[in-house]
Length: 274
Image (cartoon, rainbow, N blue to C red; front, side):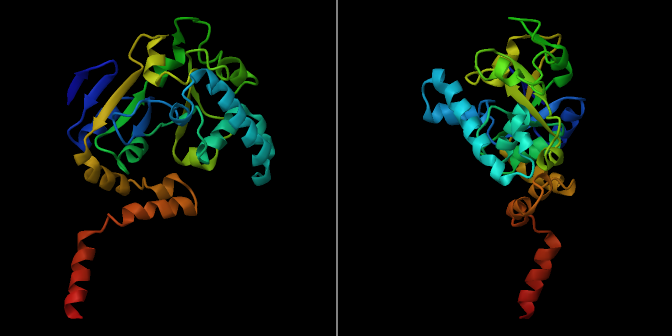
């Protein structure tokens, strides 16, 4: 295992077993997989707005309008429209149905994160590890009163007060009071930045903490095959992570790759007899 001197505690791995052993040491941390280790650790909303709205001063306006439009129309498809009145649940619903939001999906499982990193990688992948036990007690230096409990997004008006203005360099993490099936299946945790322009590691650098808050594991592309085989044996597939027919259909991607050796032998034997 080789450590690199970067702003983030960064580690390049040489084997799948090394990843399993390293992540096993991070009790209570949460993880996020990204298919390219060069991608910044930002939300889907940041990526979208950076591409289509070059003026960041207008980003809060764009975000506010997107949420308003979703709330105005989504009730048509919901059995219980009350979910739209809860800011965090509404954002989670948007996120998990494909809308860009400021939420960043993490998971309690390093192996689920590795699946998302390796399934459709673009070169070497990355798994980020967030030290939530330390972040639970940490606070931003600019205002130590704004700890996790103070800005809890499950409280009424917390989103409007601390996040909607896109002005406070904060980080909150947690789960909605009621989780949807996908969040449950993925052991998901939502990480929410207070400002959209800065990557997560820059926001965390503004926190007072007694230990590092984030770590980055780089998984070389050569590890994809052993990683996905190991994850398949753990029953970590798109079919289990995305409950329903959509997830099953997504999982067929890998079924096209994963063919057991004996099946090939039997198939070739049948061809030889025909």
